[in-house]
Length: 375
Image 1 (tube, one colour):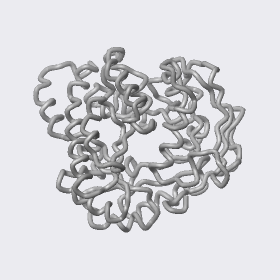
Image 2 (cartoon, rainbow, N blue to C red):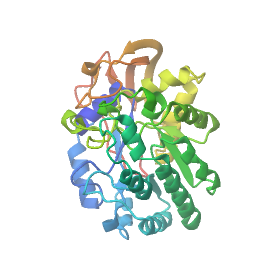
Image 3 (tube, rainbow, N blue to C red):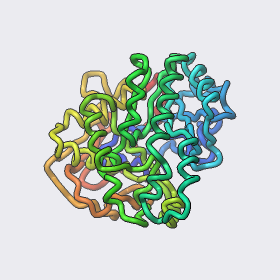
């Protein structure tokens, strides 16, 4: 993706702050030196403010304090293969070790919560199922993988006291184990694509819809909305996962798993939210106040004296069709293409400066690189 294109897309989509994930970059952000490479790459090219998550992988366990002290906002770990060799998953013993280490730092662990066991079992019985059919991919990553992973995370949080944020929840059933979590230890998010699409409408071969965990059935989508209403899901985050169009070719079993939506998340979520009776105050809680609180962005997420003047001028009534040539992320290949979305970002302000408006950007990128504790 690159920081210049990502942050242009963010500004055009009403996003004032990004916290960058530690993988899908070489080197991955698993050491202070790698963080330094990423920061130097981003310096001077960001149109919005940018912070960084660190990575928790088998090779850096026992040394997570180094990344913590370098200013990362927390640590991301996978419980199943991440899709890239340079960012391996944690097994359950390593997960407990990471949680104990992070708890001692009063840090935050972000978890991609799918266990490999149910995925491997599902793959073993696919047989000659059509790899171009979306139902084949959906069957290959069952909801049980999410449910069992979250149960392990809850048990680990109870044992270690670690604060954990569960990323991109796709299965409403997976939220069940969270009911037994100790107070204040577990938060969870879902994503605009899980709130917008149902698997029944995804046509075979349309790999722009592939992500992990997968988009599930329409009934599940409505139960995710119920979970937001009930407060069992805390926030809505884009999980922007870009790739070249070439990596999205082939079957559902071979194509890159990830959805590009950084510029579209606000509008996509508003489109579905307003249809269910939610208001802009709900959107602000899910996509601004909540993320700032969970990430520890102490001067963001509220319009109040002493806070950063991060503001979005948003027209909730305007409705337009998503056209790929209007998108600013590097590869405008998205399942939202051709879909009518409600709302329109007229202008975006970061710390009082208008970084986007009238379809244009500040000539000199004004975004800052953020560090935990000083953000």
